[in-house]
Image (tube, rainbow, N blue to C red):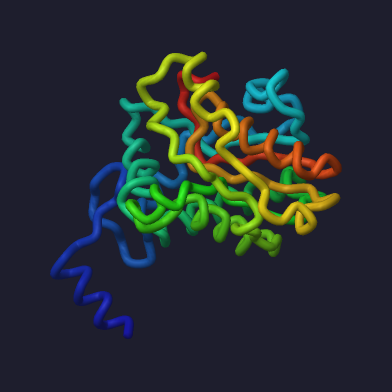
Length: 231
Ligand SMILES: [Zn+2]
């Protein structure tokens, strides 16, 4: 009932995750001004900087990230909340907005299925959710493309990548993914979805595991954000 949610808003005013100002009725997660000012990456074009990051590591069709983030950026909160503070509605809404914008650039043409980058079972149990599942849901809601969250698994919970040197990061994620049902992915163009792009090592490892198990598959990559220091 709307009057109840209005009343709750008066007692506990919701605030924008980015600028901290109170949200107006109808605004969700972030205010309209911050939504307009989202630090979007360049509109999608083939051979963009994000695709070039994967050159020489894995063969992909397309790749893009929706926004840039950095520790200093107020938008870091948005990314952090989705990753660690279980904000499924936020992840779904932002991913849906991203997908609607990308669909205009024909980014999703030919893509058959969305695969959220899996977490290991241990990590998923610990965190209680996989944020990539929600991002996948947002893209699926905007595009109608089906989600496959069971064919690829992560069987090793690698340590956090954050403090590792580049070479160690690549070594750390070797052979941590497996494809359980390759027949389901056969001949498909798969959109691999992750929340944050840093070195691209984990995504490359997952994409390579899929291509090894399903040689006739094609892979594209979408991440919600991209660390500004990456590119
Ligand atoms: Zn705001």
